[in-house]
Image (cartoon, rainbow, N blue to C red; front, side, top):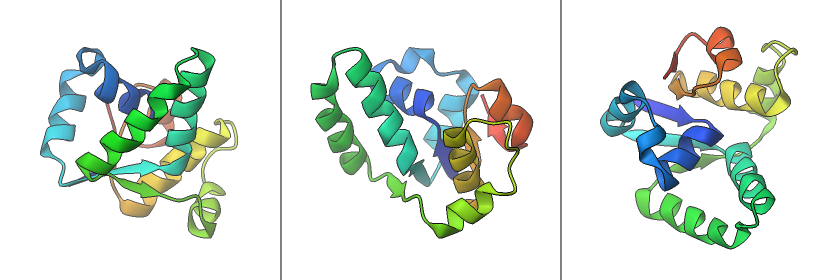
Length: 123
C-alpha cells in the first residue's frame, strides 16, 4: 500500500508523532511506500522559517533520505491532474491531491477540505 502525506502529517510524524491519529499511524506503519509531493517539503521549510527553526530543515531532509521516502516532483503530469481538482482548494492542496490520485494512494491528512475533495483521505 502506498500513501501520500500532507505537510502537517509529515511535520508531526517527524517532530511530534503523538499528534497523529490512530488511523494515520496505522496506515503509515502498514505502507510499503510513503510518497511526499515536493510542495510538502517547501511547506515544511516555510513552517520552520516562520518559527525561526530553518536550521532544522537539514534534519528533515536527512530523515526523508534515511526512511527512504519518495519525493515526487511537481511535473506536467501533476499539473495536468490538478486541472480536475476543485479550484476552490488552495493550490498546494490541489498538488497534494493530484499526487495521491496519480499513485491511486491513500492520503493522510487532517484537512477537512482535502477530505471533501479526495475520498481516499485518512485521518
